[in-house]
Length: 497
Image 1 (cartoon, helix red, strand yellow):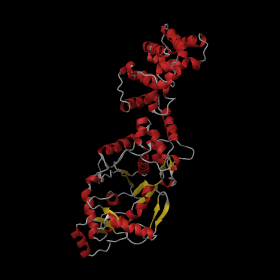
Image 2 (cartoon, helix red, strand yellow):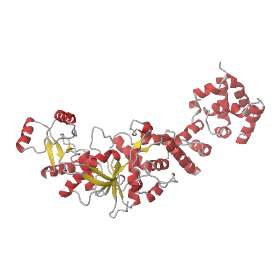
Image 3 (tube, rainbow, N blue to C red):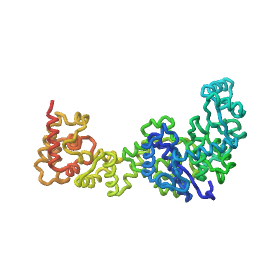
Image 4 (cartoon, one colour):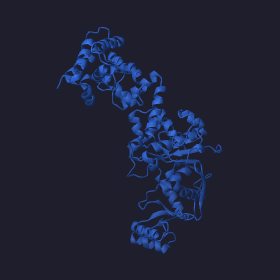
């Protein structure tokens, strides 16, 4: 694609229903990168005209998710802009006015067909081998016929009158796309209760907000002829100024088994990754790879590097598969790239916001010292929090994993735990080096055990798990008093039949 000559204006316009989805986040990312690449404007618009499904909680999650990803918007909620308001629930009067103008210009008409009547005619069309779309039954009603329906008390929807002819456009991702004449029937703009539908509000807002490029999911490809036709009508009525926007339809995001990633899949929710402790750098990096890459030999790149290089014509039209293992591995790379203080800071925020741990000064110091023990071992901040939990928990709340206790805090290992307790109890210099020397002398030399057999029960007694940070360093950080108390408790467990 050549660089746009007019100022770029793109929009991201989710509906606040449910948790933010990774496919939605990928769409936001590509729009943001396109705007930043071309020095344009990124508009964040909320499509909340479905009062039954929309929620304020979901709206706030959308804002928080974009902020977490590091995607700033130039116009939209809490920012404002020249084309506000940016929540469609606050623009209903404008949609009603446009619908009236379309009716007055005969570009739309009232349809009085009931749901049952529509279904009967659809079934008849299928039986005859015809397309089951709307058959134009009310397209040319006379005033007398319309008045008769009104007298019966029939409700009516507003349908757009699709023009004849095929619809062709050059898609920024898929190239030339054509919908043959007659394939797209007259469609509903306004429900019988007066509520405007997506088919009306989305193109109207794109027109009024002077959107130049529409980058959205492949699932919306079939609605593009409708929007092109409506844009034409809006232009004739003087509502839309400037040329039609260019469209680019982004590939599906697939899950396991090459099925479209569903909102029911746990890994589809962006909040899952926040709660598990993925880094926003890792998440945006992986989302970018779902259909695009910086180069063939570079999978890891920053948000700024993406913005500097993003080219919509290089987006692959084929479906992209969301690979949780690859996403997690890439996140681990980003964790290792953090310098020590930054890792400690991120971990502290995660512990507070996701685990509800409000650390005192001693707890903060513990995290600062212990973080270096796990940074190279974990893939997420959640894993780091789990590995360090035994150092931060109050003794009354410390618990040993039952499965690990059953394997290692056994009668056979009672002598190991007793020997470790006795050796460490006599230790005056409580340092990593002294602890290691004492345990090796007592367990490896004294009991003639291999290291794995010797230290496994001690690890479970101290950390509560078979997998933990390095044992000797953990003992030093935990302190002599707490370490001996946990070992003594483990001795009691191991003495039970």
